[in-house]
Length: 218
Image 1: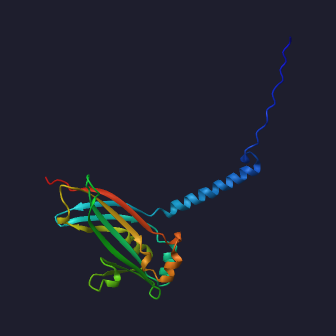
Image 2: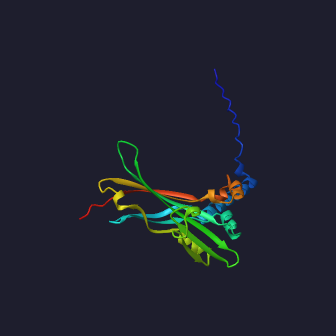
Image 3: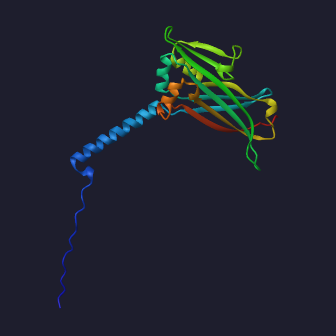
């Protein structure tokens, strides 16, 4: 008895889309488009809280930080048309509690109003510890700037901001401090509020938390 064998037939798999010349061209175009978007995103830079430092003294707890952000294009366009923009910086101090939720110690808020005068081509930054509609003249500090870059640099720098009184900090406890910064959409004119809803071109917010404990005195 003789055994015979028949070679099995193998079905050829279809070529990958990028194997043909046209597919390779399309793949290169997609890669270039992706790289362009990636580099553009890197150039714009993320909105984030950079360096953050806490300092406890006999007078209280102080916070220093650097903010990294770009002014949203829609907000800058509104500013150049004479519409002021409002920003809120908030520092929240919580005391650690292992047996329950962390205890709220204090929340300190700083309000900023940025405006542009089309006639003089100058920028003005006002800073207040309370909302501007009820601030009065005695608590608002103002400063003029010639360039937008200069006023943004001032907004992005927080230097020794007192966020808690000395008696509010217990040397035997540990704390966490959360710093938040955002564009206050609620103070935009009503038509802008409606138009800005759900539009990413208005988004500007960031936050960062840091643990803190009083260093023992020598």
